Length: 211
Image (cartoon, rainbow, N blue to C red; front, side, top):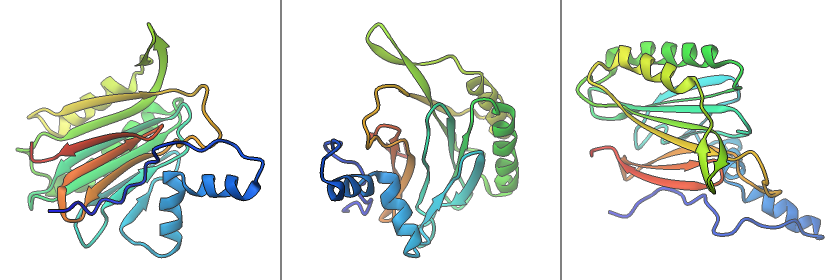
């Protein structure tokens, strides 16, 4: 089966040009800008999460299949992917400033509580952190962040069977002019168990939710 996930990532990030038209084209090529334009054109399959907000959606081929947040520059983005009893994914995504960790955890809890009736408690949810990092020994590593343990404790309340955690750090320094700061979750409309995550800096990760 051929994937129907739209490829948003760029092989090469454009450089600033003396030609203003080329700069506008470069801005419009950023993944978050592509998604924003699709929303403005009336695409109902995409859900945008603003800063200091948390949103959730039941994923389906004919409904929402993309949820994303942009403008991460020191902020914390936490995504939780669970399964409903009908087998379809439930995606929760949040984006908060680092000074409002408790607000972010509370918002995640409200969304999980809203969908709790529908959640498959036999499925181990996947929790994804996109948080600020720093270079240590020539390697980008996550800066110690209390949100990690707080979210883990929260998820444990709803899913006593346990969960899987992935932490992806991102740099806030030496960004190019057209650097993408989006955190994007795309579910394949042809098979919603296939998930592509594009983190800040257009780092791609492909996940099979059946595994």
